[in-house]
Image 1 (cartoon, one colour):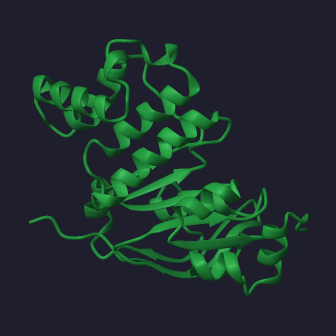
Image 2 (cartoon, rainbow, N blue to C red; image 1 turned 90 degrees about the vertical axis):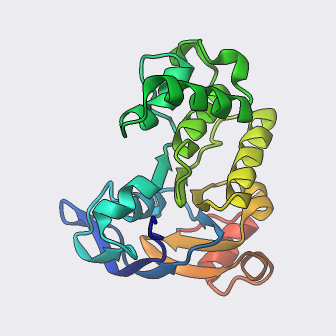
Length: 238
């Protein structure tokens, strides 16, 4: 039986680079359920926070602890970048790769990848080379690849940046479907409308500090942080 990797606990977690604090210290617990939206001005430390949570960056001080040892937690999480990194292969082989690299026979992996592509609307593009896909299609491909192993938690760094309305709608549908199937989601967005549509809870980051960690309704109706209040009004937050 696979053990649950959540909750994820951050205790005084801080990330510095060349003497500059990018984010932290942060104290935070992410439970096993939820759709968390991370918001804040440009340069606030949102991406650094996600990378530290996922393990792409090691905390300079403090702790980031899963409910199981990190080596056990890693296969049960996934990360989608703002600009997805795709292999010079077909869409089908991009999605099959996480399965084959973990030992699944290629034929079975490709069959499962084909089904995954259908679920994100790319069934007809399975044999296209990934670099020929449009921006929205590439992001759908990245999501199919991230979700193919049914991760317990999925981190996303502005997956809808620069996409048109139709692509954004499709991406949100994919994420809501994955969430309904049991995947915990933590996602950065600058789009206030998208945050209101998707968020169950919100983390607001400013100058690397966690200024708010509230349920979505409370955050959007009456943010307790003056910086968050100004941010939601559309003011420039310095």
